[in-house]
View (cartoon, one colour):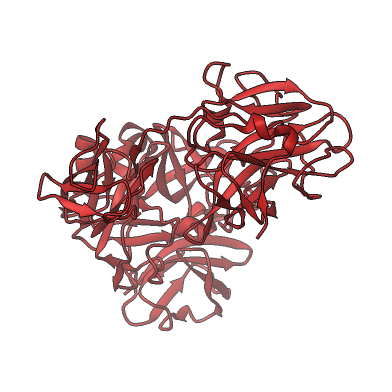
Length: 573
């Protein structure tokens, strides 16, 4: 295997006065002439490093790590540098040339490491996400990564993947020094002034971390430098205690596995010599963490009340079996409610894997309470099951004033507001996704088209008064409502009302629905489920309609007779 040393002309400049924790980016250059681009990495770890465990990553014009990757090979000697450049003409003397070294000042360059077979970013100039424009700010000065060379300060002992911290806000706290660069030889070596004293840090978990109630093991990760941990053959080893218990001796640097149940934990770690005596000066670290309690609540109202009293972040198990009123593929969201209250399940990771649809009652619901723009959400802790299906939630009839005065009492519930009108409806404007419309029953309330999948998106905003079924939402204290489907937005609309219309029995129990009016004309009848899907379409001239094929639940019946239309709500048992 090749072993790389810095070029003879810069070898003497690469002296180190201490040890770094890992390879670092010691120089970055983006010249104003041709393809004068290079990055220099430095090994100040105190030992030779196999470069096959490292890569150079790049991102062009914003994006995610990595858009391009440069593999490294060979061994980098201690106190030596390794330069990767675009071409030998613009940057002579580099150790490796790659066409992927084609960044501009607004691009990002990173150093990645193979950590337990996972490639992980450990150091960077720039970051992922949006393009910064012409260049990245360094030490509080804009566009410093364009047409300049960045040199790592000698005091920097560790790589830093957090560019915001690395770049700094002024010359004092920045990890970099900046000079103009046009073109020229690759790298200028690196001087390192890191301490050689042993260091001990707990890198994970962070102090005061709260783990979910299902956590059975917490791994406490350690970072130890300038101290060879071994069983009698190194500088010494590790002693640790959990909750002040007996001392455990540890002869490697793998994470400490802490078995856990619900409760608080304190882990104390120290470095000792081979005689089990703490080293001088003492090197120790402590971390505290908690495995959260699972709070069992009777129903959703009890959950909401506890959040109001104690704030979000706690974990809950709901004893009731709330019914889904609307299920979305977006973020696997489900609006649920029981006899007491409602809540939105936000399940981005798909924790609830059991297939569920509107009308399903959920059993074994566990999750963490959180807020998003003022809306209370439940983030599932584990999978749940379907207790029963085909359940019907009858919307509570409320007014807009009821909702605006008591948002928390109705949030995420399915309700009905009667005699409402869209005040801007003119027969021309249509519903657009994620748009606010003013809805009024005498009191104004915001109708927010937050369901882009709803079948009323692109449809004309209906004119005239109607009873409307809506889910209640909230945006930072302001009440909002949203319908699940076109049927919800036009409930009980009388368009050129059919004279003498009667629809009975309601609810239907024997599979037969009767529709009569003052006219003997044939009637066209369309039946829709609560999500707006047409489930039956028929003509009747004998006033009878067979609905025995429909499952129990709530439906909307639209009746057309001689050019006139009426819409009625129907329950089937």
